[in-house]
Structures are given as C-alpha cells and as structure tokens.
Amino acid sequence: MMRVDAASLRWRRWRHGVDLLSHLARREFSMRYRDSTLGVLWFLAVPLAQLIVLVFLFERVIPLGIRAYPAFVFSGLPPWSWFAASVGSAADCSSATATSSDCPASAGRFLSS
Image (cartoon, rainbow, N blue to C red; front, side, top):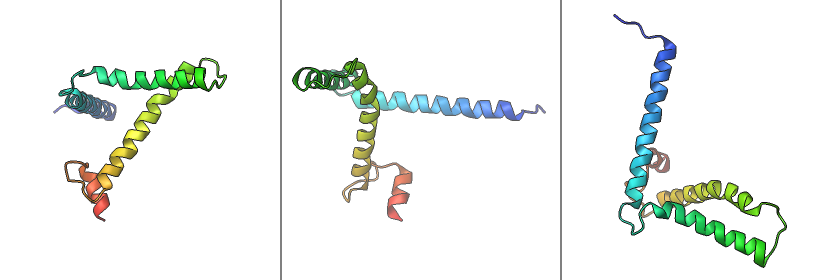
C-alpha cells in the first residue's frame, strides 16, 4: 500500500482546483461569445472602446493633466468592469423574477433564508 504524504495531497488538490477553474472559465468564455457576430473580439472590443472614449474625453475635452493617462485608465478598467458585472449579476439574481438558472445554488440558499 502506497502512502501519500500531506504535501503531495495538498499539491494534487490545488492542481485539481486549478484545472477545474480553468475548465469552467474556458467553457464560460466559449458559451458567452459563441452566438455573437464578432465572437471573441467582443472580449477585446468593449474594454478597448471604453479606453478610447475615456482617454479622448479626459485628455482632449476635459484635460486632467495626469501623465500616462491611458495606462492609468487601463489599470482601473478591469477591476471596475469586474465589479460592475458582479453587482449587475447579483441584482439580477436577487430580483423577484430570477429563475434558478440565473443564480448559483449557494445564492438560492442564501436568498431563501
């Protein structure tokens, strides 16, 4: 009988979690952009359009005087987009018309209590 040490077991559990997360992210990504006309280009086009609009607005129309403003904006767009999407999906999940497919199972238990 082969004995597995604790470090090896932790490594295997961590690796399994990484593989699972990678698989779920790839599946979500492909499902989200499967039926769109531009496909995966939407993933890049939306943040790039936001960046262009914000840089134009705050460098040309209302100059703020921040050096390297495009890099400044770009560093804040991903966290803001994630936060906005999280709040939006939480609002959709907690609305009275949400179906069970709109929310994760754990959210349904939380909302029903």
